[in-house]
Amino acid sequence: MPLIIMCGHPCSGKTRRAQELKDYFTEKTGRKVYTVGDEGLGVDRNSVYADSQSEKNLRGALRSEVERKLNKDDIVILDSLNYIKGYRYELFCLVKHAQTPHCLVFCLTSADLSSEWNKEREVDCQYTQEILDALILRFEAPDSRNRWDSPLFTIQKEDTLPFEAISDAIFKRKAPPPNQSTQSQPLSSTNFLYELDKVTQDILLAVLDSQKTSVPGDLVVIPGATEKISFCHIFFIALTFLRNEKPTGKFTHETFTSLRTTSAAADLIHPLPYSLR
Picture (cartoon, rainbow, N blue to C red):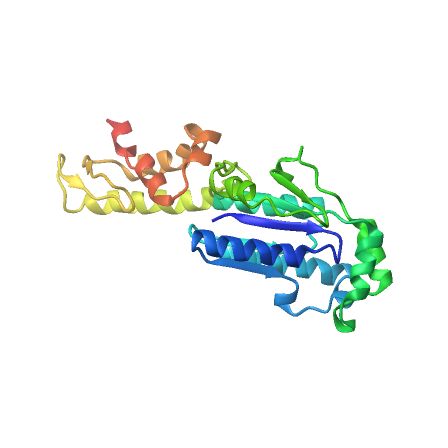
């Protein structure tokens, strides 16, 4: 089900807003609502955000956790900074692959207000001023003109969350259609040729073996194919010639991209003996 992405400066009220959303949707929909965030992973903010590789690992862990929890029934709220445009695009690709709607809730605060709220936290939960300033400086604000940042709900300090509008965005809006980059890809041409070679070899051996016991007109089972073929005598050299010619002779780029399994390849190839009649 839908993904709600929280976004904003450090100490901008994201966690409070995420909890409000969780309470609302739990009460109104009866669905399970999962919150995924930095705190749930038990990270030390100051050490993680001081090191680019550690921060990258954190984003990867959050993304993986979101991916595990996305399903057809539950709501997932990602409560983190999500301040990098490219990372938000990755999350958008994730929901496209899952074919579920999403929305972005941007908690808009000034740098001064974030700094003030940071100082009001317990000491163990505070960002150092250096880390806070650096994160605010690197922040890439969402833009509703970008499809990965839309629909966008911008919330300021005194605003009430537009619960109904957010609900409509994630329940009444169609999921973004998957595209080639988010769909399961067919075998690459290199792997496909390898698999194709195996399939054609199995077919060749099956036809040769059938010549020991079959007579013309018998139906012969071809490995991996869903249909049987009518047997006819074929010379080994002719079969070998066809096996070598098939990939380069009739296969086009569209064939490679449309065949996703070796059984589909077998169905395409198994009429080989007919071409000798």
